[in-house]
Amino acid sequence: MTDYAIHHHGAQHAELRDRIHRCARHARRHLHERAFGRGDMPHFARGRAGRGDIRAAIITLLAEQPMHGYQIIREIGERSQGAWEPSPGSVYPTLQQLEDEGLVEADRAEGRRTYDLTAEGRTQAEAREGAAPWELAAHGEEGAFFALRGLTFSLLGAVKQVAEVGDEAQVERAQEILREARRQLYQLLAEDPESPAA
Image (cartoon, rainbow, N blue to C red):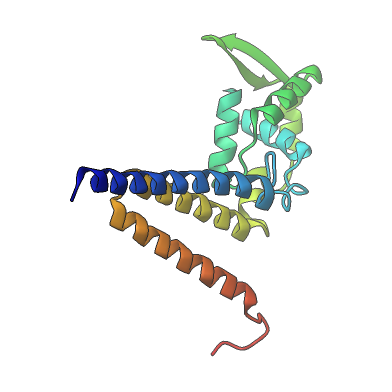
């Protein structure tokens, strides 16, 4: 094979990888902003975990122990099994509001603000009944949609890995797999859900 042919072959492979990367980035952004909404919760779940619930979640967590803002965000994400991941833009203003209301007090230690409930805040936490807000997010009617989102982003991660370390044959095989998956998903939408299984 000539030097030109080798160079041309390598350029095609690099272009193919670049195209896969661009498609993966576009798909990730498109899924996050359209199919699953902007903000803390997907658009179909916002009625269940809105601003009132982030307030309840913070009070419930601080009843266990003092925490800083990042801990609160991480705990909600872990306890909801990834179904609810509040943004700093919703957590920190709510903490400030709770502090203004006298339900939370802040203490700066080791360069960061740690929050704890006041006596009035603990009274409110003890009076709360029912499931924790993150449990509603994790096990509500939206559970299947959250699981689909998780699988989708896992798939995008796998595609990125193939694009980064796969050889040309693996990249081409990955394209075949994705085309087949896409075909089957559209076929699924075309099926009649009322028809009996064969």
